[in-house]
Image 1 (cartoon, rainbow, N blue to C red):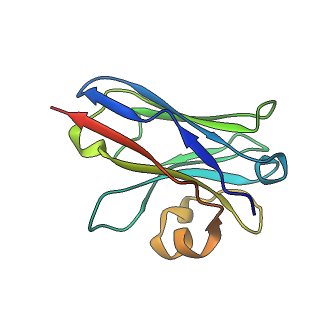
Image 2 (spheres, rainbow, N blue to C red; image 1 turned 60 degrees about the vertical axis):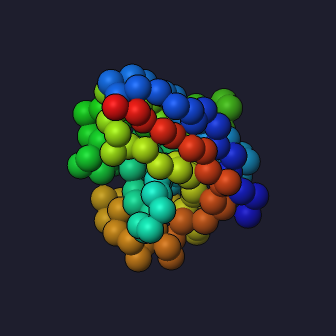
Length: 132
């Protein structure tokens, strides 16, 4: 499976905004669950937001709900993560990945075992640094 490609990371002050982009191959994007995950050194990768690209259903972790918005553009096979009101604890490396085999997202997909077992085609990650 062709890895996804993330972009858009950077350094901003707390309270600011960033938009991340995740480009996928059409076969990966179509009718699939694609998500954004983040990791800091010494901790496991955690789910941030996921989207079912065919129906637009979204799920968010409690730590970002109300501040982050995930969306998809089927014409570009790209998933976006709009991050507003950023906090220092949002600092980390952000990755996107797609489910394999393809399928709809579920709230249970934030469970560590499911992240490890179901998500594939991880990108190289993009660094997000929030300064207070």
